[in-house]
Image (cartoon, rainbow, N blue to C red; front, side, top):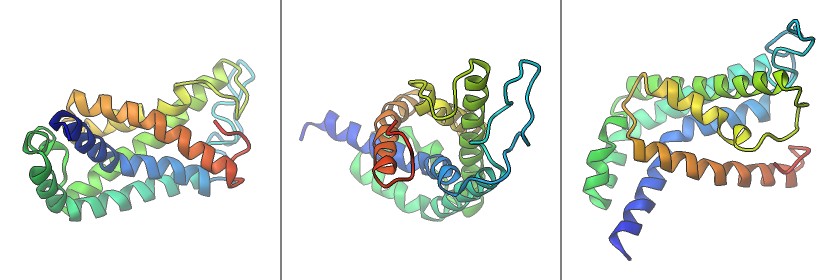
Length: 195
């Protein structure tokens, strides 16, 4: 295998690993959401809801807790992941060393940042959709796939330094993962639309 292709595969696998707290927080908020809306039914002066019924207290709390739990596990397994990266490609291992958590506390903090950021980013996406009068469940390409990623990366950057090439890989991978996950959720009856 071409070494550059191998490096991209390793970086891609690590990008997924790094973003797991955000990915699972976002998915958990959808899966376990429902109940009281985070905006408590309030509307702005434009007459449109602040966030809408899709962003709920239960989904927010569960999503953030899932992000923290995954981050904790990553903090515990961080040294082993780093060793695997160094065996696979020392250049990538050194490049992303600052993003790997080596203790349970570091992992918990990064998981909190990624999980909270994902939830906040998704809520910001809902806020923007309401302002443009986009109905709940209607697609807004790219924003639907990346709002939670942008929020997660912004808050995570307060905890760790994220290399630009890792950010680019995360954005590209997320576009494909998000679409695939939505299609699966649609086929399983968890979503009303495939996007």
